[in-house]
Image (tube, rainbow, N blue to C red; front, side, top):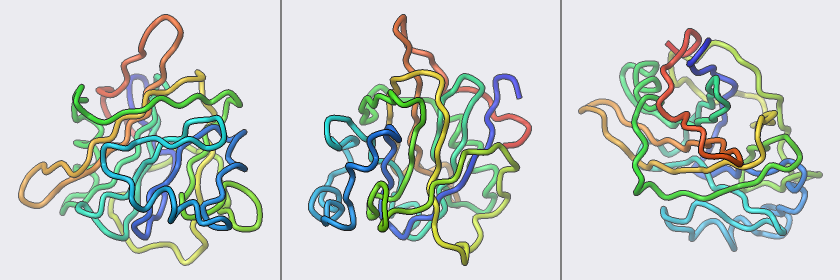
Length: 212
């Protein structure tokens, strides 16, 4: 899938955002056991895209209640290592996801920088702890077919994702409710890898075979 996107997982939200952060620091997030979700996340505004967890910055991603309240968020990775999280609503679900991936970045979109020193990106519900008894299971990212319909939530416990990363720094940009036409809309969180010599631009990669 050269210059394309692969679907690597899906995340269910009941309205709460997820955190995207260095897996090596996720044990410091106590969203459930010490009420950090209610104390630090619930009142965040749309322009606040990051939060300190210990000494590391975590990105706050997902859950645009205008697109959907309870919703799947589809996770993609491009051939250059960019990760996209898309929340979509539309009669043609697959077409709406593809349009969300193609949509150009805007320099005015809220953004934050995160470092992934462990080499593994963890994406999990902010309402849970990052590890331990009150955490969710994190599954390894795996390329597969893109869902053709939104569908109902799974009957199994909700899970997060672990994504092996190629670089250590990502710029995370948030695009909130974006209307495509009278029947479709999306929100998108784009994690673009940044290397030491410049910014790897991956936001406009064409959708590939598994996402078409």
